[in-house]
Image 1 (cartoon, rainbow, N blue to C red):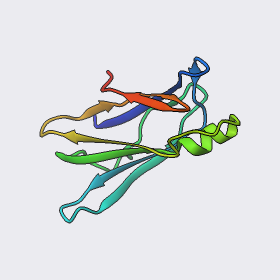
Image 2 (image 1 turned 90 degrees about the vertical axis):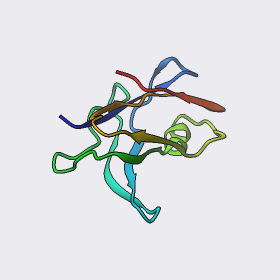
Image 3 (image 1 turned 30 degrees about the vertical axis):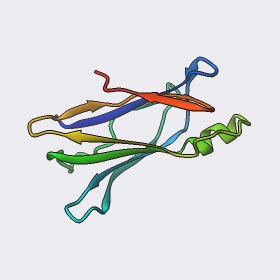
Length: 114
């Protein structure tokens, strides 16, 4: 099964970040980004699958874009980073990626989860 998922945690308040818009894109050979899927995080801050069933996950460069400005504005917070873009590499044979985002008004951290 091919899977790209994420989990956004708002570390400034210690809870999941609900309704954060997230896009998954793949870079083509000309350097342009192609949209593969998009969603909003659920009540638990998760997007369990950003790759639609008809899409494959070939080796290449991918990007998750989080619209943090919309989320933080809804919390009445003026944040430093209006967008967080996490670019990652898929190697041949890899098929599952979980990329969590730990978010605060003035910083963020990401890592490859399980």
